[in-house]
Amino acid sequence: MRRSITALLALSAIAAALVASVPASAATEAETATPATRPTAVVALGDSYISGEAGRWEGNHARDYGDRRGTDRAAYRRGWFWRYAPNRIYGSTNASGCHRSDVSPVDSSGIAADALVNLACSGASTVNLVRSSEGGVGLKGEPSQADQLAELAATHDVELVVVSVGGNDLGFGAIILDCALDYALSNSWWSQTCNADQQRNVDARLPDAMAGVGRAIDEVRAVLADAGQAPDSFRIALLSYPSPVPSGDEFRYRQGTWSRTFTGGCPFWNVDATWARDGFVPMLADSLAAVAADRGVEFLDLQDALEGREICADGASQGDGADAEWARYLSTGVLQGEAQESLHPNALGQQAIGRCLGLLAAADPGAYRCGNTPGAGPEAMVLSSR
Image (cartoon, rainbow, N blue to C red; front, side, top):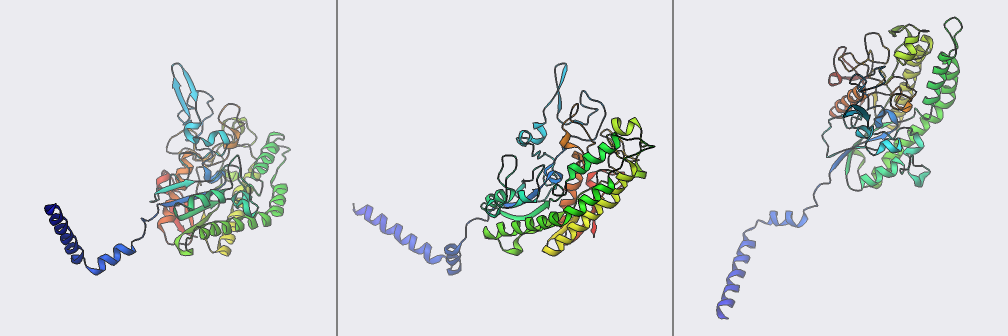
């Protein structure tokens, strides 16, 4: 018993000596230590142009069987037969139709963060980026993207949010359908064109669409503020849209021919394509840039990102080679993939836009333009001041 008491006294003396030997500053640091820093996240919000729609396709080809000359990333062979599993590309979002691909721009960005999170959903409009408590609505069985962002921000420090939205508020799908039908239902000596009617429709919808984009940005700020993030702890970048079609004088298939519709998948009259490429897309980019400036966020102009790599562009080609098209051609969805994949950046285009996001994240906050390098791949995108 006496030995036990002696041992306890000795241990107490050693402990007291150790505590006495610790500098006061170290003791204070131990007492005031904060929990480990939370993991960081970069987040994509918006519609199909950033969700990864059409990421299944690495180029285009008119062949309707096999692996479509290597362009169908969902194709695989089992025995004698080819099979197709788009969930290989879109994961669980293939069933819902949100179509978040494995090469979506945020996933291809290479930005150094603990998590690259894609919350965008094909078909989303600005109301889907608003919290439900503020009148926002979910889409395709998911909560609103702002509500999903709030859930993420509860466990992560969000460093960058990239937003691509507004196109569906303007009726992108209706514009494409109207222009394609006008081409299909008329001929070169008596053509019906869409550009005048659709410009009027865009002009009528543009104010409300841009107001919705501004509200979506406000929602991002509100969500992150509610999560306790300081205004200078994160960046927000608004993106414009790349043009999937070239100007009318840059098509490699002559208008009015079978090839433009059934081989190229670009059934548009030259005048309508020129309106889209040189009128509508730049006008939308300028409108989005104005919203970004008004809300004090960054802007990334992507209108030229696919320049020379658009569907049917002169100098580009179908297939998966160095000159492959970077957008998905117009498809009915009967023989290849789904119609909703039409006229979106394909796997190559998404990797290119992802490279743009990586360059943006590495640059000082500001307004930029991103374009490709002729003859080079997605890794050679170039960022410049706007």
